[in-house]
Image 1 (cartoon, rainbow, N blue to C red):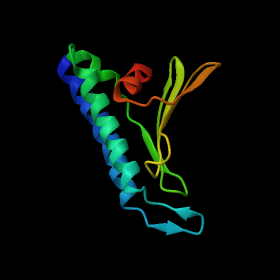
Image 2: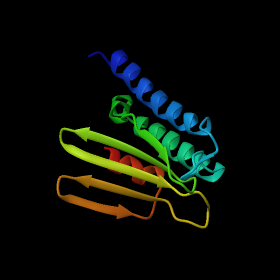
Image 3: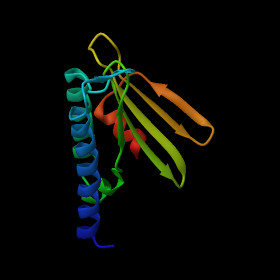
Image 4: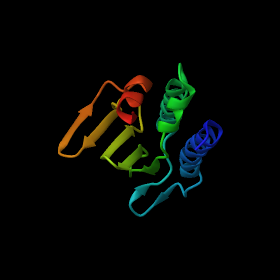
Length: 132
């Protein structure tokens, strides 16, 4: 794979992730289980963290950006957003949860094999750390 192909693949993954976030805004507002659309707070926080993490991964070495994988995106019944990045080899998962309101705390859950933890100090740098 050439550097150009790697960069194209990476842009595709970030584009897919951002499109999935925007698609959440296009859901019906509610259903019988609760809120379907994310709150504006959750949406803005998720977008900010994802874009900042993507840009941070490219600083210093353009080839590092290919590590940014596409994430799945979902809301909960309160309007919070959950982004999930998964890899099979090695098997690991990172989940970013952006709450519906500023009164709640965002967090990162990360798991690799039998090791897992929750990080409460959510920054783009912390997200990059666990994605890499």
